[in-house]
Image 1 (tube, helix red, strand yellow):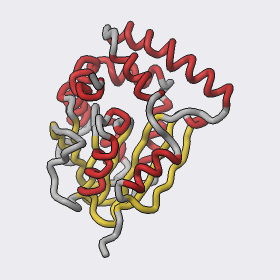
Image 2 (cartoon, one colour; image 1 turned 90 degrees about the vertical axis):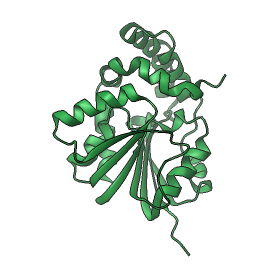
Image 3 (spheres, rainbow, N blue to C red; image 1 turned 60 degrees about the horizontal axis):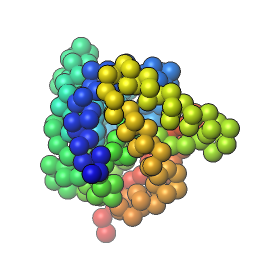
Length: 233
């Protein structure tokens, strides 16, 4: 069975420990990745954050004044509950809303959003191409897409150290803190089995995006992909 078909329930199980583990296991570098990515967004009115999770990216978008309103969609209700609590503490309820739903069938009309973002979620799509096409569909012509996703360092030594950490140390720490025997094993596999760099850029172009570009951060551990919705002819 495809593990990604049950991704919502997997993240529901680890929601309570997700933020703490995410920041701990990345040594808080994930916060810098989001800040850098959001800085590159052009300010807009209406932004869709796909796989919003606990809302770290959406909050960063609002804090930097990059969108007047953020709609976040996710399959995990427990992750969004935690996100909603964080949003409430910052008095951002009027700027960030949460919707339960699938990235493969976004419940919005064509061209509805000025921008679309997704942080560390596309590798969990059970159908990557369908998810990318849906993001393209709801994005207005010329609108901005920003995706953050894990990748692998090109330097062989750094890649070896990273793989050792990601394959052996991270799953054990994740299992110990989250009390879930399978979730962090899946997260490790999802990164190792996913595409990055030019292969991902090609999939974005095939989905109908233009001006596709990407930039690695932290020696290639993560990659930011930018693109625009195709202009109507």
